[in-house]
Length: 607
Image: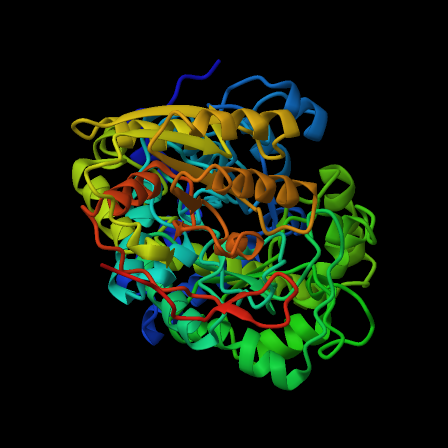
């Protein structure tokens, strides 16, 4: 098996095997990412892209369209997952076979298990780039990830720094905190060789029952979302990683998850202009590199009923021509039901390319998808000029981001940077400014010295344990845990109510208690049973802030928007008064029957 390249050897590969690039860049120095938005820098990158494009075969061009997943923690890892998906054994062989434009990393929860720790991840990135520079036209990879911040959509866990999610940042109302948060994420990704983050989410979450966006959004106010989306884009660029606003033209008013179905947005064109499109306009104005499409039907924009990803009027007509976006357009994952449920593997990628998408993410049955696009171009179903336009944008982006000149990273630097002390301190300080006190009946909080024994119960083994640990760290405080699960049984609810009798205070963690399902109803019964004991109850919403709709009379209610440890520690500090909560709701919380408003947008108590 080939040994990994040393840094000096990788430098030789960058200047040698990327020989086409060396010739193209010999006359002028490559523009830096910080100045890549200048007209001259973009023009130089585009000229080099066109020169390289002329040297590429049709097969190499088609390969650049695809963003693939690979299984394993190293470029030479043999994995059955690669054999199943691609008919080859290792990530390096996947790169050699398809010559894709990009790779997307996942953790073990999906299966590929690419990101174990900073050193391993950096070595994987270097190994994949080395495989790319040995193949065909020797074009470096866009290596992407979904690292949105918060505890919902993320791939990198400890030791990577955990930053608040979007809705938490919106509760803090700070553009500076949002910029710094994105900057930390970006810097940690960049040192591991991950050069594109599929973030920020630019959807405006106007539907409390949205099952897929929720706290991933900056909230329900288009102006607030626009301001913070722009700040996040700026932050990622400061961290030297490309950004991607998603999910165009706006996924914020759905009640269907596009992973499992095909949602429809029934906003009028006027509502789209006032609600959904402003954050994308702000991202474009800030120089966002990439915009990701949504698998949603929007009749006001395209009455044909096809998902936005496959809609020429939406992708080319609206995004490219009307909004003037010149960067990369990437699809959301094509293996999601919103795409694959209606379009088979040989149709979806062709339709997305024809609509105007530049990169095709996670196309199912890669051999089928690749050959379908190849045949569509050869047969004239997709014009060669349409293909060339997308590949030119992909290459231009890679030139602007200096990937041809320096595709590799310093592996030991990744160890030093990821999760460093300053990043973690800043993350905790930012998180502290996001906690929102929604209800505090009778000034229950901050606690007096009388509450010594605390029962921590409710959703999540790790969540209840982290809350209890934060309580127990305080002098004179004791904490017991009784985790009840996402759908607490009647017996478990009775057990929790009985346990409450032996304690001075109950902290109950809730997650999706507002959902109109068995899960929501069961968690609501738990909170109501705890309230019935006569003990003081503090409910902590560790995801969506809407859960209080189910138990509006709970004595105290804190929203953290995340079950990450920094958020939970901040909540406990707020309970005891070490932290005065300053967050304000970035959404309105309606009554359970949605006929009125329980707590308005901007609401937030303090002490």
